Amino acid sequence: MSEVSGSAVPPAVFWGAGLLGVIVAAAMLGAAEVKKAVVAKPEMVTREQWGSQARAIGEDQKQVPKWVTIHHAGSKWKAGADPAKFVKAVQAWGQREKNWPDVPYHFMIAPDGRIFEGRPIEYAPQTNTKYDVPGHIGVELMGDFEVERVSEAQLKSLVKLAAWLCQEYKLNPDEIAGHKDRAKAQTVCPGKDLERYLADGSIKNWVKQTMEGKAAEVRVKEAIRDGPTEMIGAVAATQKAGK
Ligand SMILES: [Zn+2]
Image (cartoon, rainbow, N blue to C red):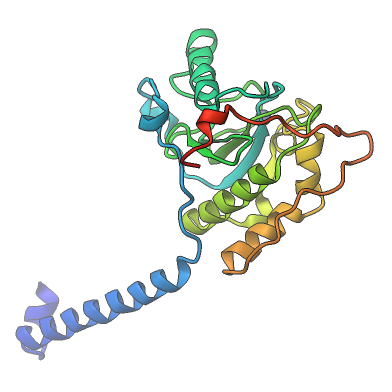
């Protein structure tokens, strides 16, 4: 206020210029936002839709998202199982056995590619291993990729989801990594057949292409030597609708 009253510029003109500046800045910001939002939010099965019974997470668990970290479930997918039931079972197990208020991951991807919403991104994930968890967005793919192969639908959803997350939270796709890269020598997660797409740069390249508005050619590759050869099983037939 003292600057205004002490200025040679009449207050009305000063405010007028200030308002114009705000409008111009807002218009520029708007243009930048429109240009930047290349990746649409992928369709998801919401917490309400799968029937989450999450408990409140402590405010001391709040985080600022910095990295995308990829996991597998570590249990072989039972062909014909229902992914929604699987997510509910993971939540119930964590609450019962670990005293975790919610599912440990932020997103869980079914063999048919459906993305299930897990715990809110604003809260740190939960882990059985030792690494500094705050800042990580945990994305789990259902299955055990030490013994079975990740599906193309899962890879496609993973790429779309990771590209959207990198865009929304201004994360570096080069820093997408697997659990075993974060918690060295503590786990095989996310399993050989999924880790190989991280190790050979496929996932980060597909994510970058998607963020640039290009159509990424996400494809399942040949089975790796010493890796699993069996493709992950299908989900319950009645659950495929609405994918
Ligand atoms: Zn993991």
